[in-house]
Image (cartoon, rainbow, N blue to C red; front, top):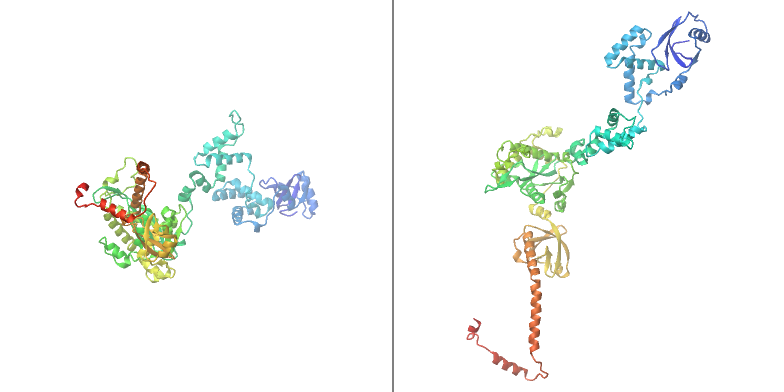
Length: 627
């Protein structure tokens, strides 16, 4: 008999861990209790193995026989695994457990030393002494380090009936927009699933701790946020922000991010009357953070976008000079459109009018809803601009965070700046933002450091314009505005080109007037004096025929036309009555004349001459009768 042999003793399987002359050190592999010494009388070591087993059997009172490793695995229903099949986490835990018990193995037969080591190891690794004993007994039973590896959990385990009830209650009462508490969901589960028809609770039911444990074990935060707060709130406030953001859209200069905001300040007009809060619309280059242009107005939507587009291509030195501000060209050198516009899902950006800008070669990218991080630069721009001026304008109409709270100060009463004053302030803030605000986190390249590019938006913009991939489009203001005008369908006819129920004319279109046909027309709602026919990308101007509408806006013309139609419609009854009266008068006169049966047809000229002389009058003498 040798060390580590397996012996079957009745219903038990023991492993020999040590052999001495009169005793053996064994562990029960099925019960997996701590190993013990079994003492016997001295046995001659020259006896054969079968003779030794017979001797040990006599002293132990049980029949002993040799046992194999496979028989042990079969008896314990344990499946041996290959160490190569274990994943990284299983290997890590397996070796950590083995490291805990290795100091004990040389002293396994010494009870006192073994106990001391178990206590110190348990304290060192912050586990219980029983845990160390379990690891030790498990290893000694199989003498295989893989038995210390944790078992993989079965992912597709069939739920128990109680777990199915818990899942049903969580889905019906907890994961809803009503935002019920976990205890409420638990109570409703007991009411619906564990009470009889009289509402009496059954003898056996899951405890709240079991319910809470199942919830924590199966909870997914994404499902939690969406089910209780809604998808929109999840997209806005809880969704993981793992995209690269700006760099996905802006590998070079020429990607403009558009957005608008209501400024946190109240303004007045020249007469001192409160007007309200202005709307600031801006375009920020995503690569350099430069403000390419802005529009400050009382109107939003497409109107502010037209002003923004004109400002982008304007000469900024001349523009600032209009407000008495002097700048150098390199401080704000932007007079071309970015090749790509990145916008949100605002109605003005999805309108046909704005999408017509694609005719100039501009690409419009509409971001999905609630993805502000994809155009974070323009959002940050608004924050920086407002933070810059608000600290200097306190008490002058600037809104504080408490303006919507009950009992807060009415900031409208503090308003004292006009739109002109505020635009001057905004311009100074933008000049500072473009030329002096330090961009700390810009991803500098080796080439930029070699060229000593300063960390200002204007400097990065100037450097980026010279790189391959810079996408800027030059366009004149007239072409830009014609492109952004609203469009409709015009109809050629003999009376000219009819657009919006008005008639227009242009030399050289005689054939079109005669043959008719439809054509696409751009028109200015603010002045109906001209429209522009679009043919193969060419804009041809047509002028208004009806001079009475000259210089009027479309709304005014439509009101005038509507008023005329209303007046005509109101007089329709009088007109019909007049026609009836006329017919009656004619019929009365005709009926009073007796018809002649014989009309003399000869000497008509003489008869006519006589009648002329008879009825001839001197109107100068008879003018009194007409007076």
